[in-house]
Image 1 (cartoon, rainbow, N blue to C red):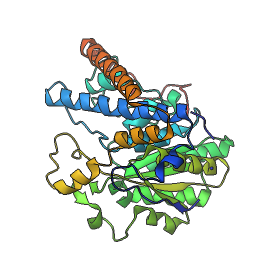
Image 2 (image 1 turned 120 degrees about the vertical axis):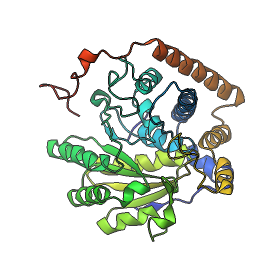
Image 3 (image 1 turned 90 degrees about the vertical axis):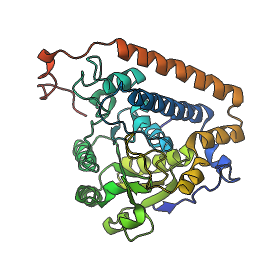
Image 4 (image 1 turned 90 degrees about the horizontal axis):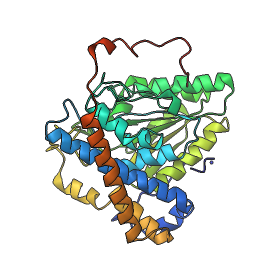
Length: 352
């Protein structure tokens, strides 16, 4: 991506994502970059849908957590970073993993617990990290990754390196103490970190209005003197442009930004959760705002693509994902003798 700008609140998109004012904003992004993000939106959806099918077939054991309906957030923010930047993601950030270089082969072998997976079969979920690709592995407890991201940003500032950290959590994660500690420390030290909130309306089964007495999660940034921005989390173009502004600000030495991305979790908290607590009419409303459909509308309006090119992308991705599934199924399980490998850091190991 072409990588290179805060307290601004952008209007949220409504309806089916074909608002008249959206296309000119999207057209600020070059054709190659917007098509690049469309590819990763589709790859994320197809890959996670295939993983869900494997889970329902009993091939995958443990939990499956997807970003269905929220792919634009992780794809958008990861695409705004430079190669030497770092992400400290969470479990809805499949798109960011893929943009940073984690492959479908890595993801499926990880879920199947194979020796060929990034953790060599020591984990059966997406607790994937690769410091060579600038990815800090995350743990299940949401918001725990934010203080880690802040620590990485502090290291960059001490070393005087022009690098930025992006980190993400859900709306529920912003109600935890480690979220507030990270925000406060980053603001006080003016660290080069960008905080994203994937506001998908529910912290597991708890709706937003039962978590906080403020209208927007972004209001929490005011307590720390941190600029914030609210964007349509289903519009990859607005997420990307907001991320670019915040990344530029952080890289310029002006400190952190908090970006709230309004979206909706279209599946349950995990695939074993039926999400019966979510009103059906709410899901129907958000189906019309699907981030892939919205991206296709923007590409058409900008004259960057046509229906035939969308079909080509989808077919290519299906083949890629099926090849990854077959590879994972044929890959060996871990050897018990390898259980101690990769548990402790080795001298001279790559640092972020």
